[in-house]
Length: 166
Image 1 (cartoon, rainbow, N blue to C red):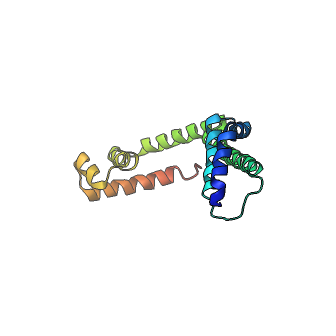
Image 2 (cartoon, rainbow, N blue to C red; image 1 turned 90 degrees about the vertical axis):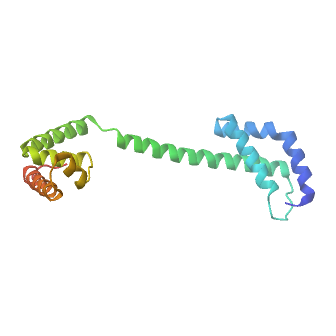
């Protein structure tokens, strides 16, 4: 921007600010965002490094406000579509809920087949995330015994749930 145009831009800002805010609002439908858009356009114009002169400043700013607002609306729509898609993917259907319920029941039945000590070790290490050392201390057994019971539990569960699909 040429230094000689800066006072002209500032005067234009003072004179037409509300008009451009309304223009941006017609696209944005949020007055505070519209005001931000207009201010952003003016900051960009004032920080321009190009030395070419803008012939019709009012039209130029109007077009810049319009384009900036439209770009913002398009970006917002894209993120809303992504949010809607991800929310739809996260909410399970009734069928998925029933399948999940049946799978949990199969897992619980398989866990009930485990010997008591193996079941306690499995629940501590797998469900609660306890480290082998902590599980060993909590149950009063050695770390190698914890490893043995986990190995035994996984083997029994693998055989029991062989034809089950999750």
